[in-house]
Image (cartoon, rainbow, N blue to C red; front, side):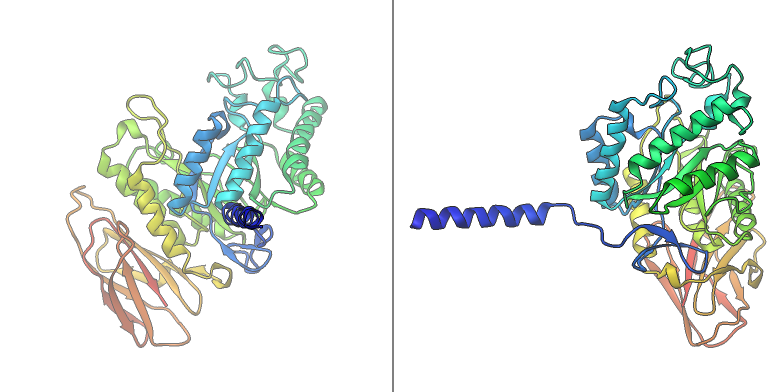
Length: 447
């Protein structure tokens, strides 16, 4: 009898441990656009803001590496990744035939991301594959659509894949997108279908493919796409995406690139959709460590103060050694601190508008950005030192807003530690505030 009892007890313990270690079923539903058209929200009302980066050819890694990286990243607050089907990791070859090994790797990534609470933007097509001057482009050995590469290709002209007029190419791409959507639409861990990277498609292509993908998906995932730098998304999909690189604007200056990104956010949010920051990063091989640090921090904390839904989703550019490194532990620590802050905000009830014109500083080299509604504001001050010395500075900030329920408190947050370093109590507006000393950027929350 004792033996039976112990066996039953051991079985209960094993089952309990299995239950505790099993992935938690995500009952929040699918991700949607919030009712204000500003941010993202789950079906059950839980707010979400994408905190993460690009990992464009993730499914070329081995499964143990994928699991290890997802475990690491999630522990630092990462809840978003963007991956590609293409760009040197093409799963379709020949046209209409999909490499099951690569497709299963995406299955694995999606499942593991759901386990770790990381949501995916799946990019279906990289328009750079139509280029003739790159090794992974039109002349690549895995460019299935080029009929000179494979006799099941659809065309000898890459321009035929940019519109809907060339029926073999258009129908093949529709089939490609249908395969992806039909295979993965039941996954809650997919944030959005990202239709095109570096989109150069015609208006007809974008409109018709949007409608087609929408018709295929019974779960109505968010649909988006990403232009290259400097393009206004024009409200063409469910949400807008903007990005910035050193070649647009020309040069590798952290503050100039940040200002360009923020200007693009301001342009895009006028269309009434959430705007998330897509790819971006300085050129590693041409930048000094402190320049890389400044740009990373500006584009980590700054975008949400302008009105974007999340940080710049950094693409880690090649180093001087030619490598594509993952994020450093220091960068992940900064992301952890930013994530901790973001998780304190109820984004689904933050009906923010950009209010840059209602904040100003006494120092022309310190630029103030702000967004807010009638209850709270987010602020980012960026020091654009013309001498590039970046010694500690301070300034006076004027705030001239019409908030409804004073008194308010303004917390100043150190972008390197995530700590509140000073708090002001504010009884009325307009008001002048002495900003605590900072080096290159400082974040504020008024509530």
